[in-house]
Amino acid sequence: NAGVTQTPKFRVLKTGQSMTLLCAQDMNHEYMYWYRQDPGMGLRLIHYSVGEGTTAKGEVPDGYNVSRLKKQNFLLGLESAAPSQTSVYFCASSYSGGALYEQYFGPGTRLTVT
Amino acid sequence: GIQVEQSPPDLILQEGANSTLRCNFSDSVNNLQWFHQNPWGQLINLFYIPSGTKQNGRLSATTVATERYSLLYISSSQTTDSGVYFCAVGPRDSNYQLIWGAGTKLIIKP
Image (cartoon, rainbow over all chains, first blue to last red; front, side, top):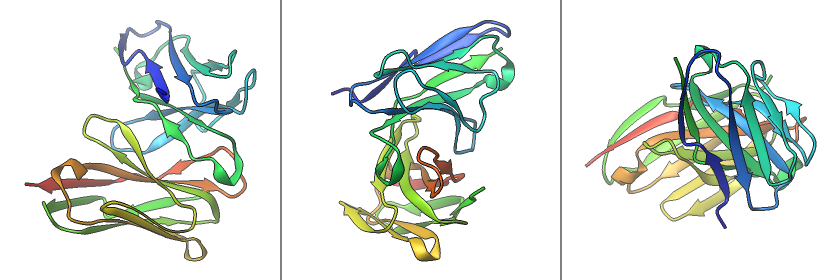
């Protein structure tokens, strides 16, 4: 049981390049989330999904797209990277929503955009 | 929206000391979690505690939902306790959102 995994762990992009971050969970969780963490701050929600085939915007969605084609995977895409997207990206999952939805986090992806 | 404030922002202690970290929130919540982010950046779930008291080894947490605060207690600190402790809350009108505090940076000196 690996929990939540993320690939890659590190990435350096040039401005304007694109990339996709992959999140996978093996806990059969319905909900999945993408967050970003900037230095000295807590996490902010980018996008989330309440089930296979669904996605929704979070607090800071601009410049990102997501897809949830399979229940266990949640992809985060950057179409045209900008230096402001330099951050650490965390994926999380939870069994459901409502009052019993403890979120479990992956190890993070450190992205630098030059 | 809901505000989450953590105190103190920084805490430096000697190994073996006890500490209390506080999380205040401005509205009703249906979820509250405490996390430890270690120096390598990994987020570790400590407690899921929207109300009541829980204990796990040297760590314990109490949430008084009616007074809108939660406390994390660390006893007999070890150097491996160093890192940033985050409180995150889920607003009562949301079934997905976690709003994060800015964290308490804890340094345990040997």
